[in-house]
Amino acid sequence: MQLQDRAAIVTGAASGFGRAIAAAFAREGARVMIVDLDGAAAEAAADELGSAVRSVRADVSKDKDLGAAVGAALERFGRLDIVVNNAGTTHRNKPMLEVGEDEFDRIFAVNVKAIFLMARHAVPAMRAAGGGVILNISSTAAIRPRPGLTWYNATKGAVNTATKSMAVELAPDRIRVNALAPVAGETPLLKEFMGEDTPERRAQFAATIPWGRLSRPEDIANAAVFLCSDKADMITGSILEVDGGRCI
Image (cartoon, rainbow, N blue to C red; front, side, top):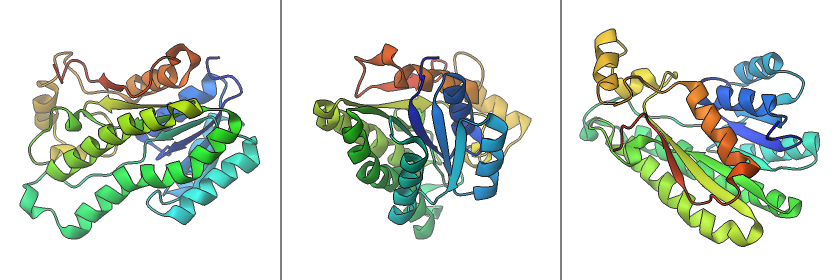
């Protein structure tokens, strides 16, 4: 019960990494608010994960939506201790000049702007609680970028820099800020990362990972529990690679 009585928000938690993180947090004693653009899927996930988990629909790129999501968590739980900025999107793997302006704007809004907007609402609540933890989900794309994903890679580079700067600025408030950098994983976005989801394409991606496989949601969830627990009290501003050696 490493997160006993903590109150957490996990964005993009109706599926993939986010759902696994929400499930792991609940098992470790946290109360969790699932935030997702797909309200029906978020509600279904919350129902499956138990009475300690609730859900709210929100577009993380919209200030009003995130304000309402934080408000819902505070109303339900009375405090906010942990935020996991997991929601993310990408453009399909393709040459950089083929990415449209609308695609570019959307991935920066979801992957980068959402962290800014969440901080506007979550940080005051954490200050009121005497501290907290913010965990941003980055990617090995920021450290060892793959061709065909240039603008997605750029958003994750921004996440890493923001994480370090936030950590320094918020340390006096006892708010730790870290990021996870997963290698390509078995999530709904995998097809977009690879360009096509075929056994051959998966094998090509797995061949670049020394550990010999793609990441799994439980890999990311286990790392998230650690970084959001008191066991990581001295860790802030860190980018933890969960990548089977991909970035070496």
